[in-house]
Image (cartoon, rainbow, N blue to C red; front, side, top):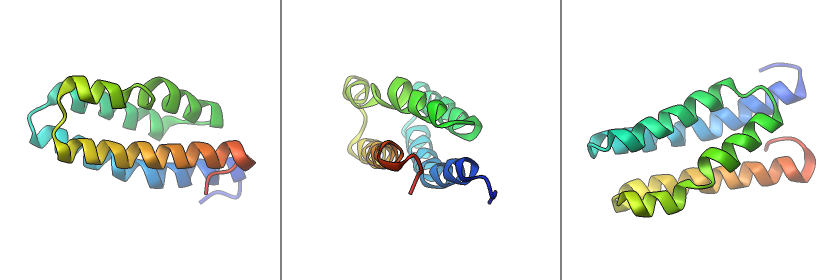
Length: 105
C-alpha cells in the first residue's frame, strides 16, 4: 500500500468491491447471462482504474446506481440478486465513508 492517503483509500475500496464484483460476474456467467456479466466486467474495469474519489462517485452513480431496477427487468435469479445486493450495500457503505470524512474505511 502507498503512503499517499488517497491511493491507500482507493486500494481499500478496490479490495472491498472487486471480490464482490467478481462473485457477481461468475454467477451471471454460470447462469448464461453474458450481457449482464459484461456490464459488471466493465464496472470492474473502471474500479481497477479509478484514480480519484470523483472516479468512484461516477462509478457508484452512473454504473451501480441504476443496476437494482435493471436487475429486476433482467430477471436476475435470487442468487444473482443476492450477489448484486451485497455489492450495492458495500458500495453504499464506501460512498458514505467517503462523504463522511473523505477516506474509505
